[in-house]
Amino acid sequence: MRKSQSPFRALLASRNSYRALRNWKLYSLALAALAGCGSSTSGYMPLRDGAEWTYEVNGRLRNSVEEVRVTGRTSVDGQPGFVLSGALGESRLAWKGTKLVASELSGISYSPAIMLVDFGGDSPKWSGEIRAYGVTTKASDSIVQKNTSFSLSGRKYSAVECSHTLKFGSSTIETKITFVQGLGIVALDEHRDGQFLGSIRYLAGP
Image (cartoon, rainbow, N blue to C red):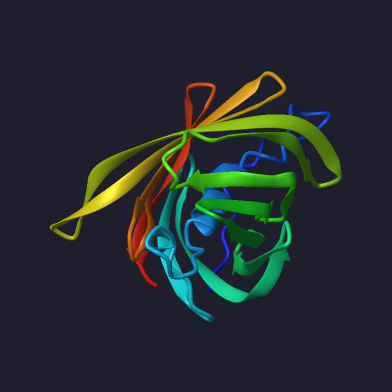
């Protein structure tokens, strides 16, 4: 698999306004959306050992095609979880009831584990610390979810759309992700302080 440089590198650093966090949302949420354990809700994030997904990644400066693979099992907050690997590193994910949580996303650590999606009907919130490249910062994230539809290759699917708002320091990252049952994440669009950062679109898998 060809590795390409992320177009989203500039947020989590002490000397340059948190430069290490820019890629966390776009790629790590894409990774997170692929984890599942076979229930009716986690079907929106299907998982099997060795499964692979392919995405078109569109940035402000360049485009690329990236793959994500399930490479192992792990534990997250005492729950059975999964390791997903891609060009930007590993993510560690687990289900806690109807909530999908992660202690690591693309090499960035979260304490406590961050809540990525909740199929229990709530609009969840998270607050804690993020650590990346030796830098730790306090952050908060909230999610608004709704049912929607998504067209893919001429076919319309029922879907769930989640809008994340991540706040840290003086910055805000807004990320809209769309899940389709049996496929995982099919679309993601991301902005920082109103400026476009990038998007991904589903190509294949699992």
